[in-house]
Image (cartoon, rainbow, N blue to C red; front, side):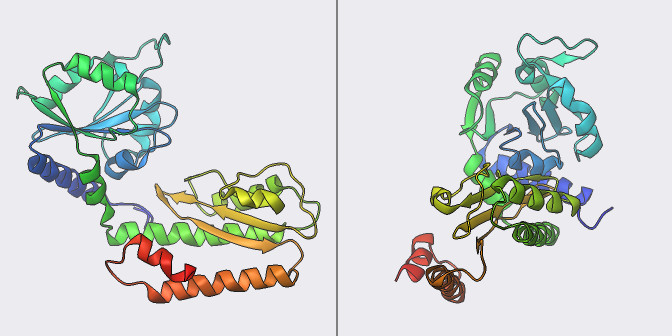
Length: 305
């Protein structure tokens, strides 16, 4: 096993944590929704990042967990998922598309199999706030007597406590982000486009093992940097521009967030140099003042004052 992977035993421990949460919330099963954008809750249990088709992880107390999705996802899911018990389910297929040779299960049948003959009275939902309305409607219609319970917050708090293996992946993603920033800096010059900067950074990060990005690469120059999170465009750099560059590479689903402001013509004019110094001083002061249990508003107040 690569040192940049979560062990199978750790994934098994996570399933048991979910079952403990189910007992605390008095639910008979947990339905953990995920899709390509909101991949984190399902990836936490599977190492699987959905591509195109959404899906879910279904966990009951006494049976093997299931990875639910569409039929096109199966080959890749089988390659990477810690849960190998896969089912293609009707609420995750593309409407009106045909799938010759695929076995499509109904919601009722999948839940009956997961419950192993036991009654399903309360179903915990993870991802209640962003799961598609149409899918939730199908779920409720198929299980009319089942109470749906939102356990998203409790699940999120549970997975917020990181293991050494997770921390290592987070550190690696930040190392890769730093290399991406270096690559971006190397192509910053008058006449270059924002796309060129993003391309240099993304290529470098991919070459180092990034398996995706948590958000579109931020490259904003001149007035475009006022956009807070501006994605790259075909705008060309001018000699007096500042370049806001930010990247979020993922490694096994764990993402960094690294952002730096560069002058097109180092070290920049007097105003740019003073701005950079003030930003660096504020960040250093804030970092030195951090303490356990501080609220976000208290942290924000330090550099503002």
